[in-house]
Image 1 (cartoon, rainbow, N blue to C red):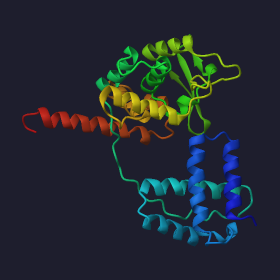
Image 2 (cartoon, rainbow, N blue to C red):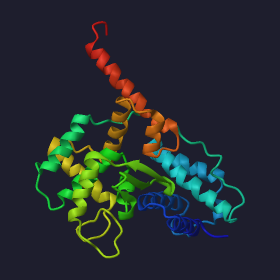
Image 3 (cartoon, rainbow, N blue to C red):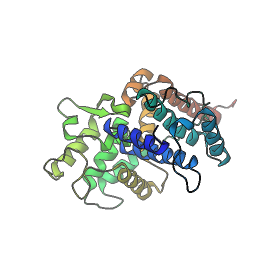
Image 4 (cartoon, rainbow, N blue to C red):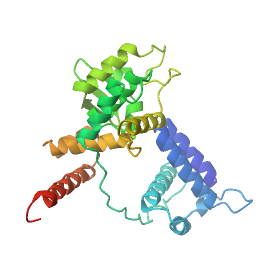
Length: 299
């Protein structure tokens, strides 16, 4: 019977083979490494996978709560562990999945912070005008920001865009989302114009399929995108809390506020469940209540 360490290594290699994003691989790798470390007594080898049963996993969960981890962090780690044991069961390495009987902690309901349309457009306008600072990569950076706000895509989806995913003649963009699920999103107006402008100055790198390149001519990373979003938000509005997902929240909320159908927004965002998209209705209702409380004489 293989050890827990050997099983985690096999599972991570399988995820890589399936084309799992680098971001997910890093997170799962970290979570599963922490799991293996918990079960390794000091100076001893990794235990046999058969010894890691439901009771042992409950001890691990108790340790996480004692360490004051948030429910969100525990849920993510538990998802990684459940997924690994499911893989091991499918491969016939174990006969039962000991993680299926573990209780998932409830996540607190928190409404996303949403940028106003004015703030989002102020950042984009400033970058287009070169107001914050004139950078050699301005065309690329503007195209990135316009896509984040104009198409509502995730940062992992953005850096995964290849040249042949774009169809500017029909104004469509092919996006590979979570689980490598593909969807089509419209790319029009300022986003399409920014992409065309960037492509006119984009360096030609033989064999490189990625749309967005770093200064070495290789595919841009999600970490680099987070850094440039934070940089421009800080330079234009003094707000360092803005991140790529802020534009996705703004995209969905502004569509809903302007009357877009919730099902259509679900398709555009690539949400598997409508309930995930429905959180934006709560944001809109909260905004309406704030306006009412401020303006209505009887409030």
